[in-house]
Every structure is written in structure tokens, then in C-alpha cells.
Length: 158
Ligand code: ADP
Image (cartoon, rainbow, N blue to C red; front, side, top):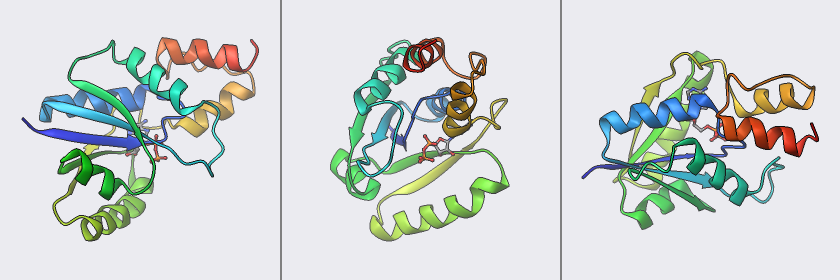
């Protein structure tokens, strides 16, 4: 059984993330969606809220596990005994950074490989853009799962 870790901030999860997870499940038997816990980074949703929204967005698919971790992804992967890290590529803008990260992670954990999946229809969607639009009163329901649209409305008092 091959497991991959899909790590990110997921503040909040978008339809872009969901499509990467669904595509990932074509290649891997199990995916651990791991929320990066970074106390220094300002976030709109707590780690627990983000985990809840991820679970709900994937209809509690038994092949998907939702977790959280603090510190190095390389260490987390080692601890979980997982060798594959899944990332999504939205375009050339992502490439430079991802190339650096993949190689740094290779150095930090020589057993680990990063695998990329190309973004589909939601290639232009990012959590930060979603937040920006929602805060300004925009309707983002077409680019985020239903639960996220609802939570955003609640959080932003609409
Ligand atoms: P990070 O803070 O690590 O960038 P994100 O939650 O923004 O965390 O993203 C996690 C992963 O999901 C990254 O590999 C990113 O490229 C990918 N991703 C984000 N948005 C999309 C999207 N719309 N389509 C495909 N992949 C995406």
C-alpha cells in the first residue's frame, strides 16, 4: 500500500486542493492531508477548524486521513513512515519554489520523494486569494467546498 502526504496551510481548503487529493488517490492508496501548524503565521481559521473543513470536503473518504504537524515535513514523513510527498503545481510561478523545496526535503530526508500533480480547472485558485475576495464581500462559493463557503460567511459575519 502506497501512502502519500499532502501538506499545506489549507487556510481554508479550496476546490483546487480537493482536486489534487482526488487525483492523488488515482496514484496512491492512501493520502494523509497534513495541516502545517505554524504559530507565527496569521491564519483565518484554527487548525481544528481547517481539519474539520478538510474532512467534510472529502465526504470522510476512508482513504484520506487528516492530521496536523509542527516542524519539518521531512521529520513528519519519517515519523509516519511515508516516503512520498504530494504537491500541486498551478503554473510556472509555483515551479521555482517547489524545485527548491523538493531538493531541500531530499537533503533533509533521503528516503523521501516529492511527486507533483498538475492543477486542473482551479489552477488560478489559492487560499489567500479566496480570503481576499471573501473579506471584500465576494462570492467564492464556486471555488471552495460548500462547508468552506458556509464557514467563511459565518466568520466574516454575513
Ligand atoms: P502552502 O502554504 O504550503 O503553499 P497551500 O495550502 O497553499 O499550502 O497549498 C498546499 C499545496 O496545494 C501546494 O502544493 C500547492 O501548490 C497546492 N495547491 C494550492 N492551490 C491549488 C490549486 N488551486 N490547484 C492545485 N494545487 C493547488
